[in-house]
Length: 306
Length: 306
Image 1 (cartoon, each protein chain N blue to C red):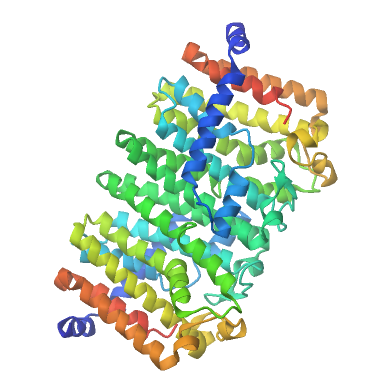
Image 2 (cartoon, helix red, strand yellow):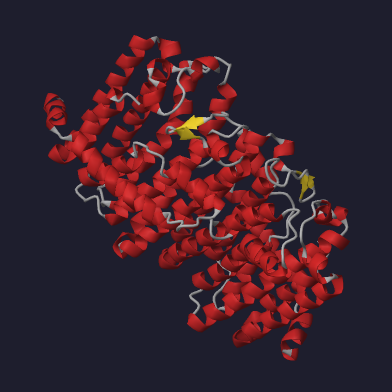
């Protein structure tokens, strides 16, 4: 464990993030090329997809492929980009007036504010649809990965579907003002945020041809960092700087939403996140040095300020 | 041609439709099994998906597979069911207050009326996502079809996406009260309705392993019947019986939407639909007797009363 933590400290995460984020942003722009006179719905898709984001899910997908002994090749990059599109569609729909009614996202007006409600609904639908088009397209980049790609589509669609992310959003809305218990809050987050993060990491492993032990290690790591990510998000919503985060802070309190800080206290929430990260790192010890990016990313998830 | 028309007359379409629709309805229910206490979003998905419908897209998918020398086996049935889910999601979202604001669909209150707007948005999202899950799952039913399934996901997602069905809905909303010219109306319908009908038929051909000539014949047939379907829909919106159709009639006129009857006159619109069907039948002559279901379905599309 200490060895892994030292490894994380010596790893150049800033350089790793920059090079991977650059590749992701370039590939996203190539996958959604609307031309000089884009249609209105395409402009709305670009507005949300190309807003500055951490690109955490595709980065995790690529780092998982590297940990499992593969490389972050073009098919892995493209699968990660598809997951980023699914994440973006979910943000567009969650921000709608009928749901969370948010005005600011990734430092830009939300899609329905910048365009209109109908366009935002359709732009979200279109990003979700495009995600599966480009997932299928991964097989053209590397026909040998066809079986892994079909399995990834299965994993990703289950994570994003009505037993995963969508059920999480339903529970989140139902929980507003209800005072959820900690177990319910945890379940809601595992569905709403955790499921797609887990799918990102599992997809990297699948496309890299991970063996059973490798797949299991990645799934355990993913479960813990997904939860740690959400605990940190809740802490940032209380303590964060809206300018830096690109979205409003304090909104959870205003909506009387249960959060980890509100249920556990802020210090206990920080300890909980740190404990989850320790468990995540333990799971990926089997990958040795190849896990350096995943290790550094786990630390980043709880230490980020946006 | 006359031979084909005779064939259509002697073919037992009612029996064919009933047996195929029964298989489709049973398989849809198995694919979306919410259990005795379904979650709210699952109940909303069932409300819309299991409402009585013609199941035209899966029937066409199965008939196309049969015409191309394959059979309507379980993988073809399942792919057709996935397309029906995409069709249903598009109806749920098009009916939303921010779009067409419709109250009645398939004889039931629309999804946002029966549930609420947020649930309807998420139920649509979930059906779209589930469609790709079960498309990927077709490979488990028949691993030999893996390549055809990946190609079908590509065809279906392009048809449903921002250059297909979604762009059609954008153009439809933009055209309200604008007095579209005939060419613009045709383009809008080719995107909004035609693209997914074409994808249904192409998917049947792909999964049956159609050769290039077969694929081309199916695409030509599909283009013509897709347009004929919409011309007939417009005629029914003017002349139809709301009780039989399960949705309101006269709504296009109320919204000052351009339609084939409003631009061409009702008799010319009927002639146009008949001409499209003739061209569709010509294209599938190469399949001989195996095209009997597709032939009868083409006639049904313009002769239906709902």
